[in-house]
Length: 195
Image (cartoon, rainbow, N blue to C red):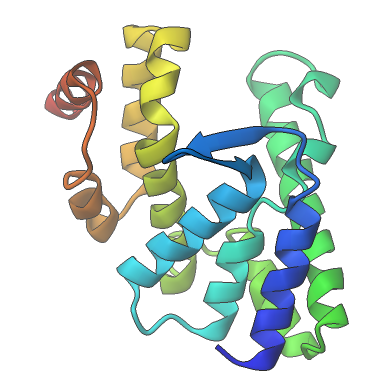
C-alpha cells in the first residue's frame, strides 16, 4: 500500500468513525461503517487479488457517511426507497471525492472511484461487478441472519433472490462457501430452488 492510499484509508476511517451505530464482532466494538468498509475491502481483495488501486479505494468508501441521510426522511415504499438509495450513492461519492482530493489523488483516479461508487455500468464493468459481488457477500456474511427474525421467511426469500440476481458467478461461488444459521441456509436453498 502506498502512502497516498494509506492516507485515504485513514481519512475514510476517521470519517466513518463518526457513525452512531456500532457493531460487535468477535468481542470487539466497531463503528458500523468502519467495520463494513473493512469487510468490503477484504471481500474485494479475495475476489480480485490484483484489484486496481481505484477499486480498493472505492471499497473502503462505498458507504461513507451512510448514517447522514436517514431512510425515514423519504416516503415509505419502493419509490421512496429508490430515491433514498440514489441520493445516498451521490452523497457517498461526493464525500469520497473530497477526501481523495485531500489525500492528493488526481482527478482521473477520483472520477474512477466515483464511477465504481455509483455502480456505473454494473453489468459490463468488471470492477463494478466485483464491488457489487463484495457488497452482496458482506450482507450475506454479516447482516443476513440477523434480518431473518425481523423480516420473516417470505420477505427474506425475496431479498435473497434479488441479492443473488445482483451477483455474478464469482459472487455466487463465494456465497455458497459462507456459514449460515440453520434457518438462513434453509431459506437460501428455498430461494435458489425456485430460481
